[in-house]
Amino acid sequence: MNEVAIDITDISKSFGKIKALNNVSMHFGTGKLYGIIGPAGAGKTTLFRIILGLMAADSGKISFTLNGKNMPASSFREVAAYMPQTQSLYADLSVEEHLEFFKDLYGISPEVYRRKKDELLQMTRLDKFLDRPAGKLSGGMYKKLGLMCALLRSPKIMLLDEPTNGVDPISRREFWDMLHTSVSDGILVLMTTAYMDEAERCGEVVLMEEGNVLGAGEPRTLLEQEKVSGFDEFFLRRGGLK
Amino acid sequence: MSVFSLRRARAVFLKEFKHIFRDPFTLIMALLLPFLIVLILGNCIEFNVQSIDLAYMDHDRSESSRKLVETFGSSDYFRPYLVETPEQGFADVVSEHAKAMLIIPPDFEKEFVIGRRPDVQILLDGADNSSISAISNYLNTINTDAVYKIRDIPPEDNSPLAFKTRYMFNPELNSRWFSIPGISAVIIALVAIMLTTLTICKEWEQGSMEMLLSTPVTSLEIMFGKLFPYAVLSFCGFIIVYLAARLIFGLPFAGSYAILITATLLFIFNYLALGLYISIISHEQQVAVQYAAAIGLLPTAMLSGFIFPIQYMPEIFQWVSALFPARFYIEISRDQFLKASSWGDLWIPFAAMSVQAVVLISACLWRFRRTLE
Image (cartoon, rainbow over all chains, first blue to last red; front, side):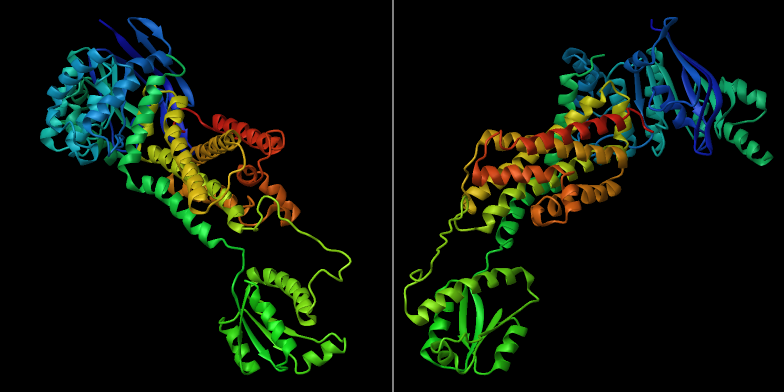
């Protein structure tokens, strides 16, 4: 079993005068689905970009461990898959062409690819749409294709930035089922969401607002501590206090 | 993790080719546009002036005056026609029915016979700058010819000195032979700078670059995979120009294919690097197009000697033109079509383009970081 963990200590990042992340620290370990919850502008995307090395932090430290051993950031990239928030697939390439493209980028062997492709198509039920260009997929199918491209490389860590944003309720439920399958396969999943109802479905949540961590832990425990019935109430009350 | 994986570079390259073949705009821009540009520029850039309509007014109506008009008519350059009044001829020049007007005074023959120099007036349309110098040149020749014709003596007999001019490399002084070899520079600028800039910026704008950068693919593989298809397209543009030059416009090709193709590949490399640099500094298609036009297309057309000869530019612009590879490429291209100089004769333009390539690639490597900042 591969035990992957990410430790983030006192990370800060500013864009001009705006402090996107303000001394945040958090810990992520294998076998769980972490939800990073917060309204727009909380610093969720910036956090992901820094974890992936797409941006450098102004200060602070991130360390990755694999089976208890330290892992350099470059090897971390080898085991991580990322699904950005923006529509990042190619509108004119079909579902199959996307899979072929990422197969080559990730250097997957033909046998593994064939097995993985069938497995993923079955899971996402996109097998009937292999020839359809990504630009002509519905919102839910588009996100599923993004997830397929990420899962194709059999990652140990998956970072999903608002994966259910703009997806219809039924596709959202299907998407969540797929995420839970990935977690039970031993993948560490980090996802951001602005949907408060989704927070309760995560194994652990990190609550963020304006670059600060407000709280972290199991959703139910957190709610009891704060004496609120849901996370929307939590954020609304904070807004009311200001 | 390997530094350069052929498989990953090939994946990016194949993906890019799919984009190109599915987007009619790119294909038209890359293949049809070059063909249209050669046809249009090849037919329109014409510095040879022929069949100039010449209104004439003959007050003398003598044998000599008739011979003078005949001299004008017997050259291919002028088509004289008679007008009844000076006003009518003047009106024709104003309305551009005639480019010039010739007025022969009443005692033209008499003055000629007694050995004076009769004044013949020529009115030229000075608003049309492009044909004026050509017409003035013809007038000198016609002046000499007319004198012989009126005196009825064969030319050259009483002249102590005779220049026999032969134009080397382009015996008929065909201006198309001069302009067409430069067109491939403009087309490569269009394809290599414009299209590569657009395709890389699109990747940033769509957010797919963020996805790509999170995969194991290296920046070198992305650059190679994205630029190579446009190198191929640019080279196709060059072949289109070459074939049009030879088959449609009948240009000779005196030089060596090795020299011309090496120069073309070096030039394409330069412009791909320039397109890459523009997309690195702008990241947005709209901004990139403006940069591409300002530092790519305009100097290629204006400061490369393609339209305006470099040796007649003010000195400062001659130096500015040396900053752009197009000047050197056009120099080699013209030379190879018409003159066929050797590698040794052309070392300066080759060296200049090589230096430019090194500078551009260094600039790209310096600015490109594998991050989103």
